Length: 317
Length: 168
Image 1 (cartoon, rainbow over the protein chains, first blue to last red):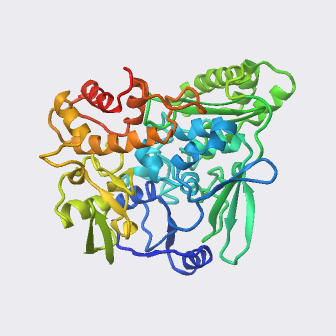
Image 2: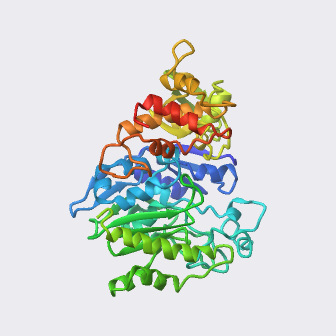
Image 3: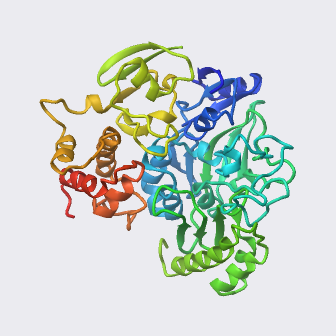
């Protein structure tokens, strides 16, 4: 691990200012992804501002029937929240399908959204990777790309975003609330937080340098069933090969793109009265495989249709 | 960097490089070798300790993040003269072979039983709004963050089930 200095933030505004004004500074929340990447020297910050004890962990009802989740709430705290369990089962199911209990006890909501890809070449510092070292090339194209994207990939990067929680938040139409270095705050849809790789896969979100996620705001739950379904190599404690979140008529996919993927074509087909299988087919018309991940296209088709069936039958309704 | 962590009930003053993980602080600086380093990447659970009563991977946390925290390691769970019920159950059920993962398994199980008692859900929970029943499927799912290379899982499950007191 490269040497770095550390400070514990006691004030949100001061924390944002510290990261904005210190060269190569990063926020540190739970640290479960950042510290792992620092050990491998994939992340090499010179200064860490620990925001883990900032008073940003409250989970509270909003005036319009939604839920405001502080960015420093742990994944476990959100999953255990009575309102989340009663009204947002897709969110709770997504959270408890991710990582292990130990990781969920430490990982925060804000950190979960900003975790980085598990692409094997991003982790393998002996190999080219445009995300880790811009301009070096993409080893996954033509390489071991079983877990690569089937939507929205580019010639520069075919990595996927690993979060389960973000997929459920996307289907629920949630927004992130942020604080910028200039003191202004803004709301941004979770669906618009992450970027497609394009020619700059190292730029993963729309956040500006030093901008801190302070909360996630989930609107009132939609009419209709909610469900999260995840396919993976082990029954527990494994990243997804593909996942589907359904919340009423909203559908989002995980582990298939550089960001939580809004299944817009499927949603439009469903709104037009298409069957669940037809809706899945409509979405997958835009899918493109990389060879070893071709199985994901059939997998997503079946997973999406089955999840829609189950949601309609009242699961989580 | 000066950091004070209460470990097994005793305040310990440390002066550490910021890079030292909580696991290395416990093992290399405080001589508490019970917590094990398996993968050092949060994938095996051998380093599981309780921080303020909640189980985490000590390898994926910096010691300086824990200034003022209360940490419990396997050395703070039971004594040779008075074993913790989980320690006794692991012996009774023969829930280990090499023993390397055992401190993490036991710390994890202590935290897991508290989580279930607080009604926290898991992936195995059928009804998210009902009280948690610690079925075998629930125990297996909740302990999936602890790998046992000897594959003593059936015995680990039996030991935890004994202490949980739930029907098989």
